[in-house]
Length: 173
Image 1: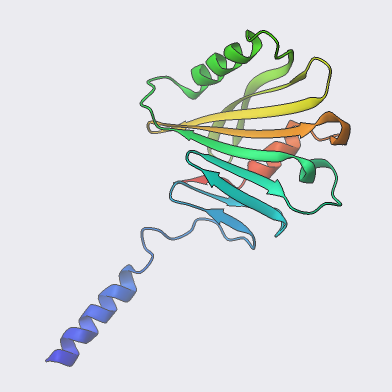
Image 2: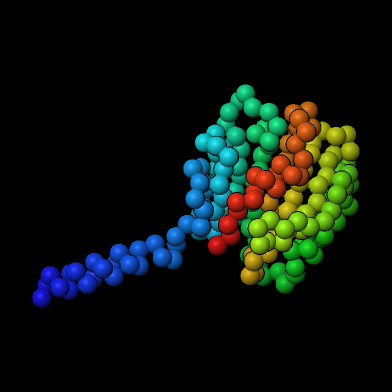
């Protein structure tokens, strides 16, 4: 009797193991937490989590282009009853109206990656020192801000396409 009960419990455990939290991504270098999963380009990419901020940076010192940039994902779950597009517009307005920041808007639009619609913009400082790209997405009540930033002197042609490629595997749980 004990063996039969143990066998049933074991079968139930095995059949349910990982059914809810099974990964949607299959890649060699993956970052995952309770809300997102992301395939990283190589083992040189490091992650640091600070509350609602996740930073991605490349640890290799002899790299150029996208590997010299810093990426981040920020989540906001403050029940803002606005769309991702409105959030993007408000964020952009706050940056462009801040005296002393000296920012030039390069483009503003939207992009579909997989089945997700992101609202984005790219900008740089007026003196051209820093290039910055941001994408905004909303799922349920959470807003996600994906950001890539790189100093212009080491930009080496990096643009929004490179940052979109970096984030294309993003799975939001």
